[in-house]
Length: 155
Image 1: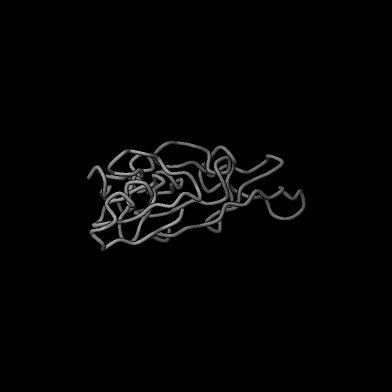
Image 2: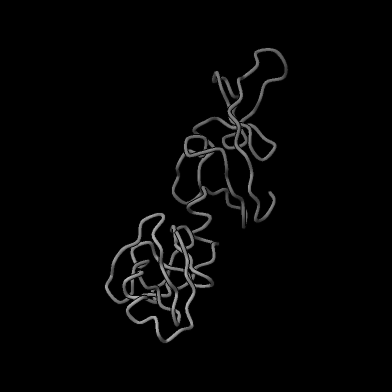
């Protein structure tokens, strides 16, 4: 098995003619109407599962991940091997699988991406300003705009 690799999962029909296929998971003959093809091998739909959460990988998408001899779903791969960081607003850890907002080199939890003076949340298309590494809404930026050193951003 290849280490640290993203692989595709394909649902393919079992062809009645040709040599019988053996499942890479249970080593039994595949008699089902469909089988999964992944990692250059064939699998029963119930046998290709995430090593951590046991979800059926054919059900959760068309991608699986391998690392350290484990077959993993996307979420568990990121949970185990993804890069985590800290939120620029609250300083708490952001798990690698969590959606984030970015402003320059800063990364934020979605809930933390708000004006750091009045706590106004931003919607797509709203203007926000990065001033002295703080996210500000337009009203708060214009109220303290005299100090300079700011950059305007648009979501």
